[in-house]
Length: 201
Image: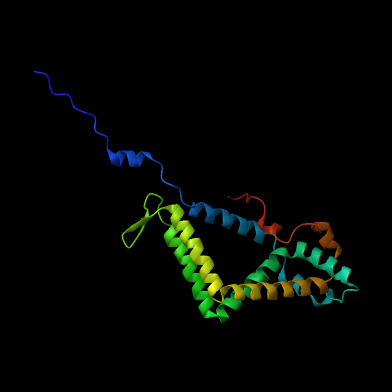
């Protein structure tokens, strides 16, 4: 007596597993690459004693001379200048705790709701499931609204302007030496310390 024929039954769970989930940001890879960029950038940082050497300061002869000094000094002290901008931004945030807490809350939302969340686990809030695209869009909209409604945007702009003013003032009054021109090309950009692939990654 022959056994009854079995009908093929599709397993919806297996079908869902066969579909590749939408990948989220490779957070660890991003951190590794950023740390490599940071190590590469800080390896070209100049001694702070050169930055504050009083004997190397003088008044520029003209506006074009001041602009030329800023361009050359920004190529040589670019990592130091970026560090100075970061310190000014940190001081502004510390002096305004509400803005600091707002940025920390936004960063935590991005980390726990998107970057650190496994790609195979959809976001569920109040019983409703959100895809990665919807989560990304929602976080982006919330971030823009929070920055525009609160004083975070004006604080960031003020900090950047103060930092740039300090950098430009130092660059205009700091006399570039011949060593600067030998080691650095004056046409290199201010943010060139962050460009280029990190060899350690």
